[in-house]
Length: 435
Image (tube, rainbow, N blue to C red; front, side, top):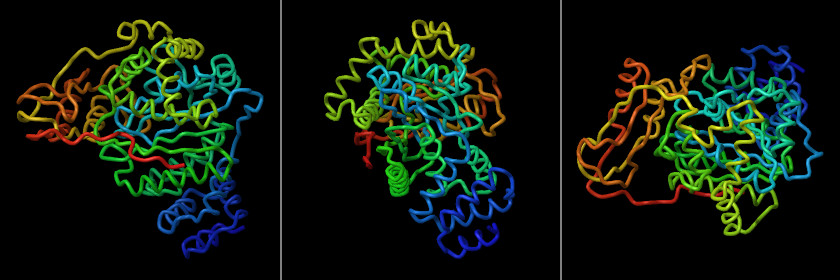
C-alpha cells in the first residue's frame, strides 16, 4: 500500500477499496502514516465525501483499531443513547436510570464538553468522588451490578478516533458528515450494542444548524448502524433555546435529579420521554409508545429510577446522598448576577449558542481541551420563549466566581434575548424521526 496513491485516489473522487481503508486507518493508528498525510486525506473526504461502501469500511476500520467490548453474557438487551450536543442538554443523566430501571442494560460512554456545548462526564464529575475513568473490569462490574454504567471512553477503545478527532480539530476538517458519523458510530459499535438511539440536535445552539444537514447526518448514522446489524433510530430535536432551565454542571445535576423525582421543566421531560420511548422499543421491551411512556413515567415518579441512579453513583465512587440533598452536596459559586428583558412583551428568542458561550466564559465549559471546569458556575433560565415579561425583569441568573469572567459572559449575552409584542408559535421539540 502507498499512502500518497490512496490520498490521490480520494482527491480524484475514485472509491477506495476496503483493504486500502483498513490499511490506512491501521497505519495511522500505529504512526506509520503521518499526521500531515492523514490531514490531507481528511480534507479530501471533506471535499469529496465517502460513498456508502467506503463509509462502512472506514467505520469498521476505526472500530477494529482497538478493543471491542463483549457483553454477550448479559441476558438483558444492551442499548445506548448518543446526543450530538446542545446547550443545557443533560438528558442522558435522567434518561439512562429511567430506562435501565426497566430492564435494559446501558453501557453508556459519554464525552466531555468543548466549546459552547456541555459534556455529560463533566456534569457527573461535579458529584463529589464520582469517577468516570473506569478500567474494563470495573466498567463491567458496575454494569453487571446496576444495569447501567456512566463512563468515558477507555484509552484502548477506538484509538484511531482519538487521534483523528484531535487532528480534524486542528486542520479545519471537523464539519464532514462522513467523518462525524464514523467517529460517533465507531465508538458506539465498540460497545457491543443491540440497539442505539441518536439525538441529533438542530438549531442555533447545535453544531448542525441546518435541518437538511442534520437529517443527512441522522440518515448516515442510522445507515451505518443498520449495516452493522445494530437497530438504530435517530430523533431530530430542536436546539434554538437552552434545554431545561439550567446550563452548567452541578446545576444540571440538580435539574436531572428533579426529573427523576417526577418533576423537571416540560421541555427537558418531553425530549427525555421521546428518547426513552425509542430506547425501550429498540430494546424489544415495549413497542407501543403510549405503554412505554407510562412505564417511564412510573419509573421516575415511583423513585425506582432515582434509587438506581444513587446505586450507580455509589458504585462509581460518588456520594449517593446527592440524590437526597443535591444543593447541600454539590458545589456552588458564591456570587449571582441577572440579565433582564430589554423591553416589555413576550420572549421571542433566547439564543442557545450565546447562552452556551457565556456559561463557558464563566468557567462551566472549555475553549481548549486542557481548560479546567468550574462545576459550581452556570446560568439559570428564569423565563423561556413564550413567557411574558416586563422591561428589566430578570430572564437569566448567572452564578459566578470571578468578576472578570462575569464581565466576559455579560458581553456575550448582549442581544441573546429578543422580545416581541406577540408570543412565538409553540412547536414540538421533536422535529423528525429517522429509522
